[in-house]
Length: 81
Image 1 (cartoon, rainbow, N blue to C red):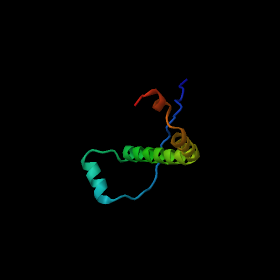
Image 2 (cartoon, rainbow, N blue to C red):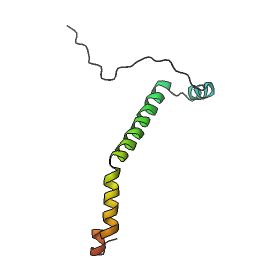
Image 3 (cartoon, helix red, strand yellow):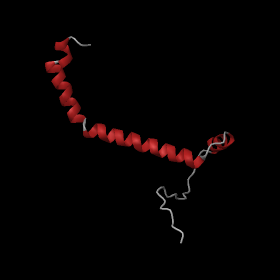
Image 4 (tube, helix red, strand yellow):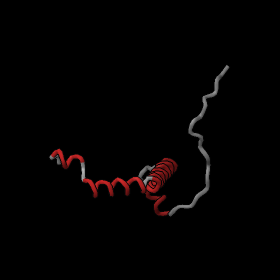
């Protein structure tokens, strides 16, 4: 009996439009359009996640910065740069 491998990265066909000149140049360079799209989407999502994290933690950053302005850094008392 054959066991089927569970596929973790399912692929999905999509239709999209792209700049024809860019597509031609990428293909001439041997680029894989699907792989480039995947990489681009991952980077986009990383940037969005970082932006969301910064916004969610903005109040903490501001509070910490106020504390440093008021009391200074611990290293100031120790003479550490």
